[in-house]
Length: 336
Image (tube, rainbow, N blue to C red; front, side):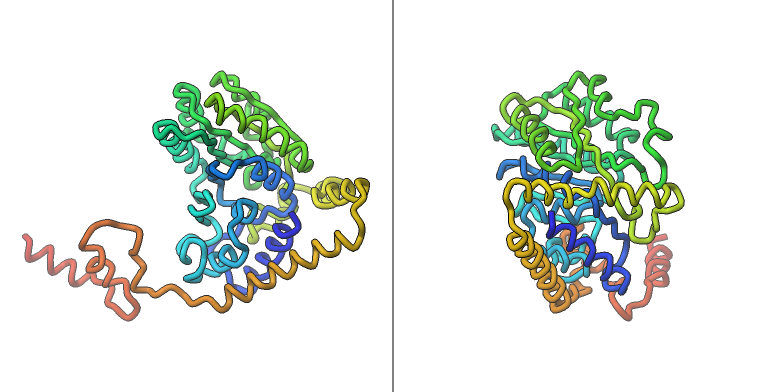
């Protein structure tokens, strides 16, 4: 949790220094929810997440060095510099994104669960999504298929109270999202996502049922983001400073687990060591990202299309190349 918090804070700094491009969605305040769920996963379980993805990659074991390099768009990033903040990916750690399209990961998660069933594998798929995704068609389609075919998927809804800038109770006829599972005759539970142990316990029980009984389920994890929807959003137009301050002062998940550790006998020296080690890991990640080369522009189309003409088609997009409109028009005229 400490590594994720420091990594997110550093990502915010690097974004504001223009070293990270595109969009950047931070999950500061959601560390217990992330770690609680991922820690309950088995080594063979598969994870898909929404675009608020940095913490999931780190919790799943993806090195901080390759995650930061990916944010920098560098060749040594976990997705070879092609994914960036919203599309992190590392199949070696069974982490399959990072999905920028809202609810786009749900059908993919159902498909991966179906593949596991067909292959006779006893594993579960964790599909994390934000509360804003539950009103998309893919939500209904994916849950229906998971229920009809008994697919081992845990649909984990991270409810941080806001879909971008809209409160959950403003956009949902049933704001208690876990209750929607009943429409598909699957279990639905809600847990305090600021409590890492409670989250872990709830996720572990549902994942065990998914593996052993092929029982899909919905787990609504109640959490809060202390930053805006993205780094470009101050997060103050649709919520009060008092609300944010109250969550930061009373419900910060790292402060809560720290209090619990101290009560259990942890010393200040041990906690300081965790902080130092985490900071060292993040500092090394930035240095690694800075030293990593940019991808070769000639590889732009690699891994995208299987068309043997891809190289020729993308040649017009290389640095210094003409846009290609004249060539295309000439080809059309010749064909006519």
